[in-house]
Length: 618
Image (tube, rainbow, N blue to C red; front, side, top):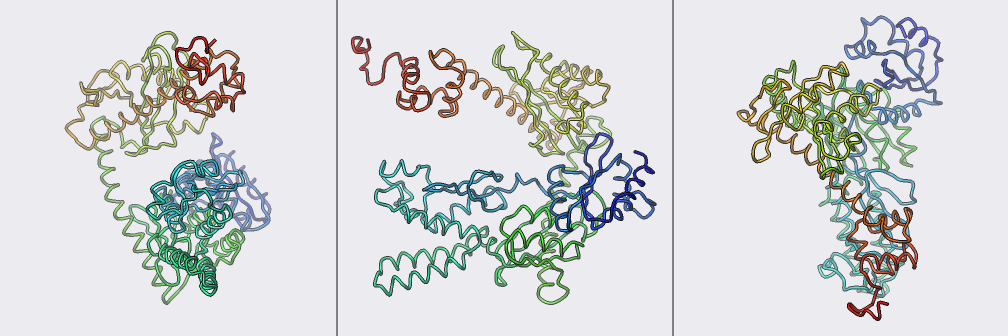
């Protein structure tokens, strides 16, 4: 659409709240925004650009068309905007890291529920807590809560393992009450798990109050041993928040925000409980333009809080984000209690905001020095290879095979000097049959990769600034032929290895070698990329080989068809586990007759038949 057509479409919008999505010529969403009155907000983009910021002018120049979604209120628009940003990851929006970076704690359902760490919710009837800051902190939270309440963290399964073996070391160390012992009441286990869940929900004060009252009742009833147990448990829970910042953060009454914008942007969130610092979170983020502090806060706070189940009562921010009221309303509905988002102007709370800002500034400055080193390495790489500018995205390829079978390829992506694992891709080679051919395999992989990009597949966009091919001159030349067929111009270098299988140089398709060993930083980066590409390829190859071997070994079992083979693979996971299973265990999965045949197939005789007893075997 032309600018006039876009302006006309915007002027036809109603004065209602909603969300708008700006899209480029390929249909990719490049910006998501919300508005109290869609007509007024969207039409501003297509008026006189002299009043626009640099980022807005650049974004509008790429807009080909836009879409809108109408909602009934501003806070609904806020929630929807956040959801669409997470879904489309538009490059002109401020983006925090994906939800995959925030683990949750899952409490399974059933008579004996257990805690585990997961990366997202599922509609499975279980309870979820979080998200937490990282995998290490989440594991700490689970271990700390279970240790305080002496709950199991071992791999034993209840109730089938009760009484099966002696209690593990955790019981003897006093970290677990030994729930695998006979006679332990199921009701006590569930009650203890409910207390653990209350801790993860941030209800430590309420739990401590209830347990203290119960301890007093037991003491009055002269049940001193029971009262002593409760006393120790109350003490452990009371100390938990002081020693464990993750749990303490859940109990926070107030969150204080600090924002720093320099060479790198960073936010810091201080979690306060009754005036005491209970925890801190910081994160670097990219700003796609020249947003002011209020605009950054508007984008970040919504992305930070809306996915979370546990929320503070008060959120202090250093500048008016323009959506304090809407965010307060959305968070209040989610939390089930009043959440107040506001900007303090003076006093102790304003001083806390300054402390949060200093935390954000210190974190950003520390990261900047690392980023400066990264930038220097990429600039040196560009200078050595003749690239017009430091590469922002590099893709590396390797082929792996087991003889003439299981020929696979890996595509590893680096964003700057860091792996971008969400963009990694794996390929099963289809055209090469009967014998391995690295050149033909590489040709197929790059052809499929570039075709997917040409078809507009977002998983293969954007194209990289450089291709790195595991191999020498011929590999690089093969890659060049494919790019020429597609009419794209991407610098290509082969990664040449030494006698110890380490990358020693880069080579162009024309055969010119570029030594990289003289610069340690560049040498380390290319070596890391080569090793990561090889690791990813060989891991895929081994997985493929293992699955094919298992499939082949199960094909010859009489009476075991595809469904039963799949059931065995799902239950036991590996050929070794299937071979080690008893006839009864196999029968549980595929039936008695088929289980007996499978056991005979692997062992040559029926179960419980003495070895060498041919008469019994018959």
